Length: 226
Image (cartoon, rainbow, N blue to C red):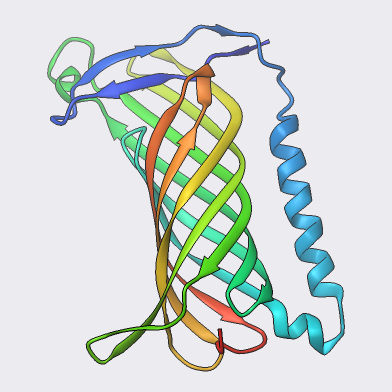
């Protein structure tokens, strides 16, 4: 048996509104995460192992900074790979790894002492990405896109308070993402890219809506002709 992850709601001023930690009946082994992770990893290894020029023309790798709201906001990195089916459609796999450590407002001024909350959110996502063709904004050319991805998330939370044993819990659950963004071609292979998505997690048997922002770069082994 494992514990239900810490559920925290905070006001805009940073004050804690409520949190709970209790028993949970989900299995301890994160089978959903393992399946999604290995599916994506096997797919990336397969693409990299193909020696043909066709594979080189259709493979893309990407990475960058990621921020997701919720749990006081987590920041970290995003790694991705994509396979282009045609000049406008690709199948993408993304892995997000974000962290945050925050103190809970007025408790540091009371006999409770400073309460610290540490959060670690990981997302494993796979799904289609569609580009709409180059659009010119002033003298710059951007390529907007829309994306929809599905997978799983893992959230681990720890509450620490002076003189009290820390409490930790984690959960794994289904996640979907819907959004889009745009890219700016730096040269024939490199692109700067921004994503703005709605990330919908279902941790602790409840739904959470998060805003996901990614700022990064992508390398296309073929060319940026799309």
